[in-house]
Length: 74
Image (cartoon, rainbow, N blue to C red; front, side, top):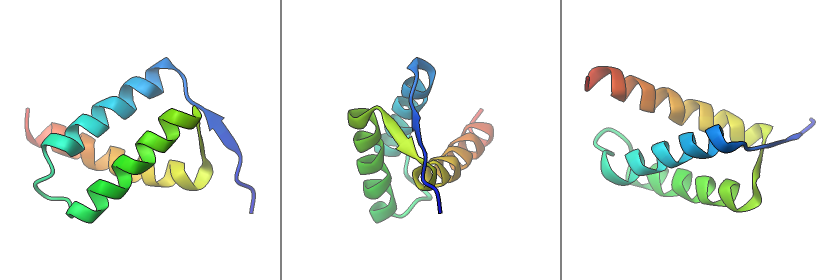
């Protein structure tokens, strides 16, 4: 299995910050352990400046949850 790195750009960094803030503040429907792990992953990605395919899957899942939350709370 290949695990290519994708470097984050300014827009991705902005989106990671949005998700991190949401996890920090509005975690009503998400398990606390998951919140902690995802926030750690976001910090790691921001520090490294890139993410791997396996990490992208996690980010996509949490991004979907964020988008669903946004739609419900308009």
